[in-house]
Image (cartoon, rainbow, N blue to C red):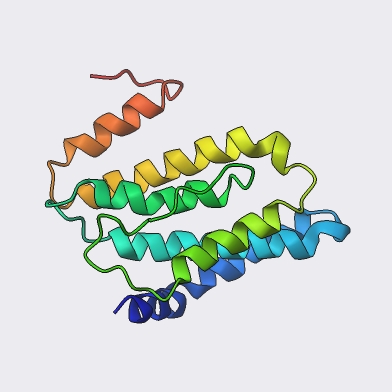
Amino acid sequence: MLGALARAKLSEEGFNAEVAATLATLAPRPHRRRVVEAIVALEILFDYLDGLTESPSSGSPDDGYRLFKAFTDAVTPASLPVGDYFRHHCSTDDGGYLDELVAAVRNALVCLPTTVKLTDIMRASAERTAEAQLHIHAACIAETGQLERWGRRCAPTSGTSSP
C-alpha cells in the first residue's frame, strides 16, 4: 500500500522534484551534483510525507508529527536521526523507502561545505514547514480557524496581530 502511495506521488508530483533540481544551477560547479541529490531527495521526501499525512487520523494526533521528524532528521545530518517514523501510523511497511530518502538527503548534505553553518536555519525551516503542512491537513477535520491562528502566531512581522 505505501509503495503504491510513493509511486503515485512521484507520478503526480514528479515535476516538483524536477523544478527543485533547477535550483542546483545556483550552486558552485564542484558542489552541484550533491546539491541536486539533496534537493531532489528532500522534495521527494516532502511529497511522500505529504501523502502519508493527507488523511490525518483523529485517533493518533502524533502520527503526522512523528512522520515529519523524518523531514527534520534529513536536514540535520550532524544529529542522530529520531527514526521509527511510523510509530503512530496505521501502515508501517514501506520497504525502508522513508529511511532511504532521509539517508539520501543526509549523505548529500554532509558533503557540502556550508551545511554545518546552516544547520540551525535548515532545522527551523523544516520544523516550520512540517507544522504548516500538518495544520493544512488538519483543517479538513478541525475548525478552520486553527490554521489562521497558527499562521498569525508564526508571522509576527506580517503586520497582523494575533487574536
